[in-house]
Image 1 (cartoon, rainbow, N blue to C red):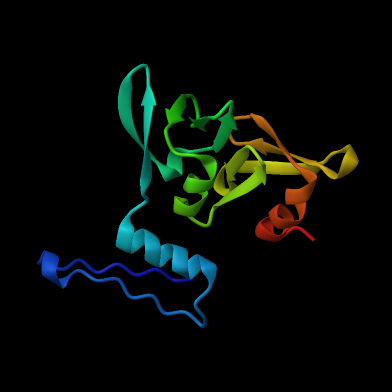
Image 2 (spheres, helix red, strand yellow; image 1 turned 90 degrees about the horizontal axis):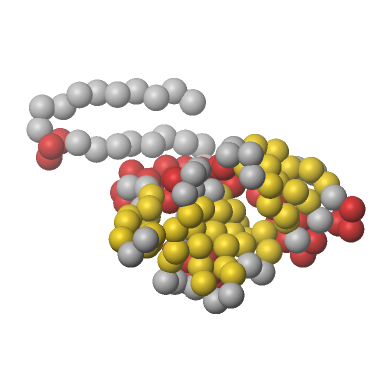
Length: 145
């Protein structure tokens, strides 16, 4: 795909035009990113509140009715439940178990495990288990036959 940039002299003249054969999920994601930015979630750590961008999140886990957001090197707590976050997150986030959501952009590789499960190795070298009931959707989303 070709990308072209033209500089304009006024903020009012800024616009983005996407020309494509069809309106795919990737095109919709690009439109969403241009219109809304990368988005994020309010999180806490050590009694301080932070804004965590969606692009920083590796995975989200629910443990003992607490929701934790994991980034490359930090862990934050979030007040929202997993199902609430699932509705807010973009298309690159997918549930991999009853207690975990992963960012597809942060998966380095996946491999099959005995019993029909899979293991995903993330870019930060963490390993997360993909439950059997979610394997089919993960394969579909990653384009694995």
